[in-house]
Image (cartoon, rainbow, N blue to C red):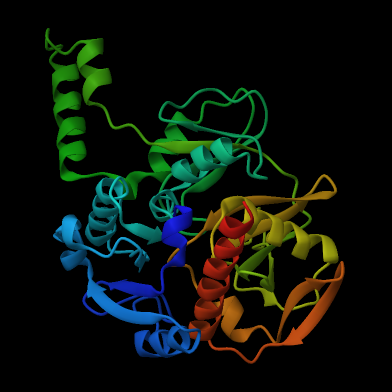
Length: 347
């Protein structure tokens, strides 16, 4: 948002046929009426707009200072539709919250990697690839898509991981991919003369993935939700015989360290978003972020944490958690916009 546009007092919540996610279970929407009530109590005019209406909006007749609050979706076609809309309209006068690139990063580890490099985020060393290149040392391989720990594995040095990349990505294959492999098998058997290396490389299935520095785990990680300056923390133990904690079901709420809360708050500011979900791990005596989401993240940690934490006068302060998820979102949105107003006024 430009300084002049930060004076916006109209927030338009973009829904998918009434859905603005996510609650529990995943397919359940947040209560948009509650969101409207909470935001109005902060002095904002609030309305709802369906995603299709946003896509086909005449941009010449829109409010230049309105803020379009947008999320994401786990239905692949709807997610792609959202990505199409924000990708094109990001060049218009419409103000999206969060920013379009943060919406594109939803469940896309490749975009997260690229954003990490652009904004010098505190992420482990990683590269975004489409070819399976031999790692120089023990490395974590993560398919671009897939929530949580799905399609994540470790590749050892001098160990070709192309086969594992293919096998772990089988669920991503399309009918076209299957037909290609069947045709390839037949043509190889009959030594078809036009079946060249160029043909293979042009038509084969590539798997976009992130190759990330392996971080020795202490046996657990943290799911951290940050709503502006309020930090909710869930400790997740690793699965038995596995290096991954996501999806283990072994959860505990405990008082975090001052360093963890500071790290999470600093990362939210770096990403420049009102709210964010972080997967954090303590490795080599410092915290590192292995994944982040700025839209459509699970609210479990916020809903069930007995406390949230802030930093006040350089000290960690514990507060009883008495807020709904909708109230937490509304607080983060209103406080973020207010902070941007102060920035524009002073800078």
